[in-house]
Image 1 (cartoon, rainbow, N blue to C red):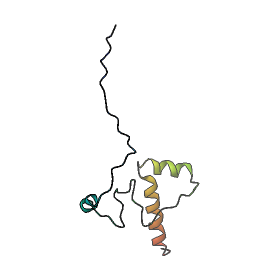
Image 2 (tube, rainbow, N blue to C red; image 1 turned 90 degrees about the vertical axis):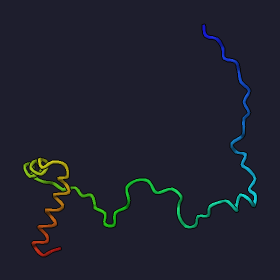
Image 3 (cartoon, rainbow, N blue to C red; image 1 turned 120 degrees about the vertical axis):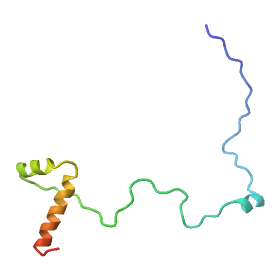
Image 4 (tube, rainbow, N blue to C red; image 1 turned 135 degrees about the vertical axis):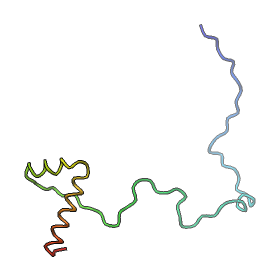
Length: 90
């Protein structure tokens, strides 16, 4: 059987009890204007975003593109852009 630990008296402080804001507090405080203190989380917003589309491709074309490895969708975008550039549409 385990022995009980003797209880130690603790002083509990209510976390909602804020200290008084004195003139000395404001003299030593840092001043921030117009900016957030924490950096934004996540990926930064891109200047030019991409639009999701549903595209139907032949199975052999899709297999060949996927076989090129990760980034195949980006390569499709580059190929379409190059094709439009050659055609003088971009």
